[in-house]
Length: 308
Image (cartoon, rainbow, N blue to C red; front, side, top):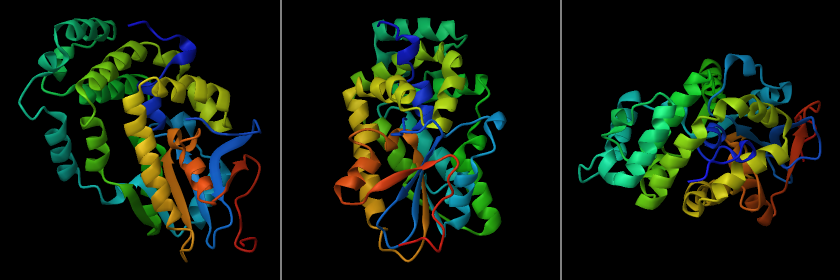
């Protein structure tokens, strides 16, 4: 497999960092924050980064304000109610092959040799992931590589907002379950899983070179950098793009569309890859007549008095 160029990185490590991501913007000072317009209530949509570093904080004031003004925070998963024990059981059940096959057998001889060679360049012995299916091995490699770069899930946007919501007694809800999210990957075909792992290993070596660039692009809404380096790379894996992005976007848009006449105000937090392009959540909402506008970095969110 041909290694991607530095400008085409991240269907694996960096795409997962922001997906689980580009922003349609006309301003260099734009934020990964949108306001849905024409709704009876106030709904803000925040593109998240699932893992961050302490140096990446604080969040922009407009993001903090959107959180402050929301009655309910709606995330991909209700992190406030996740039970660590049940979550571990769910992961263990889905991450292993139902027929007891090991990673080497699931990959096949050629793919195993190629993956092992790439893992060795990262200082990783792939045999440590032998009990798992390729999709989970790819996730594990991603987490290890991002941890090497100083990224921490406890510092991700969702984790930080969930902690603050608990302190304030603010309600948190989920758009999907952990099991449903993992089944999306578990249901990928064997070929797609093998490609996912191999691409992850190849790209992980270069992730450190562009991590700062990706975070800067997230903060400023740099559509060129993020779309070219992230989403386009995922599109080159059609099965993964359909399962991980399109189908989930359709589900998210359907759920968000049901909230526009609610009496409560919402901050909706999803990975930023879900908020770009013709298949994005925002585009799908637009087709339903629910428009959105991106918030500028120096612009406050809509206030109580200004609401339609």
